[in-house]
Length: 530
Image: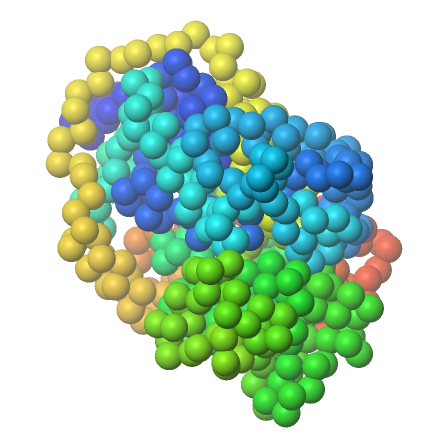
């Protein structure tokens, strides 16, 4: 591919996405040159910053990496790669040391030991936290500060990747657009060494989500269109306790509240989880989410009651949740918190090996954009930040032996984040009729509960949207591709497992105890037959 005015050469490795996985990888590559592309200023568009619970690690007395892996396997409903789980759990302590070294103010006791939270489906208190519910923001703040003072890392803000660029059978870079430039000529940013896709999940494809507004399946969509193998796309985790205020995105009430003893009740005061699972509110997320969904479907309202378990303690121990409540006119000390299931995390993504390599030469993937085999059908709470740092480090090790190259890259003139323009672009995209229709389709037909009729209808409607949307952009095409992969894989998997629940096939089937591997071509064939 020849050079032109719209081609720029990135220094060294090119990382697409500036969440925890991408920035951790950049730091681990130092002092080798890295260019990181971010649509927004560091920390603003990343799901990592919104994480409340913390980072799971077997660092407490009596705990072990094996026990952590076993809990991961049990939550993952039979398709976790146990060897991967053990290896990731064993690396947790070292990665936490990295984060602490970079200034993350983890909660500790007077002796300096970590204060650990217990979350659903964990057999030990093992969630390393910050200020109760501020782990994601505090970790990202520390990592961003370290990135800012690392001269080998170049950050380019205000630019969105829309396509992977390929030549001679390998990924050579990405095509991007400047902020707000929907129809201009794309810019090709060539990766002088390698490309790392760390651009997040797909929660924003759903009408109710806890994810930042820009997280809409773009990473998986562009990778699939370039020929990447996608693993487990049908497994979408719905968090049971998004705060039901009507906000978009929905604020989250961390699972740690239930770990402290908060309970779920309906408007009649009935504590329904006792009849559903022996662990009640601390059952795996998919079970709690479906229970809440069932209550709402049958006309009830669902509340998280923290009053007895926490009382006034919630104001200081969980300041983020308390602030969300107070801003919505809810006093969590004296009132119950209205909650609803919301799209929260995608267990699927670009299929990668133990080093984060995809099947496309030249492309690595990490964070929620990837599928490592760790989460199986249902992610164990607080394993997402752990996976992000472990695979960020592994990718850096895997590609770190490449010869460092520093180009004479010209300044990225005209590429910068502008707050006013950025917010205007986001509001415009969110209000596009086609985007609203797609989010409705996914929530109503490919959501917490699914069936054959609904999934076939969803696939037909997604195809119609993709083909008829006026002024369709690559970004919207990526969204439609990701939605198609989720729905097609959900239609093909005729059982229920973890985050995938079919009302017409409500039980697990041992014949399906394996990962889904699907190309875009396969998904489009299923869509065409719907």
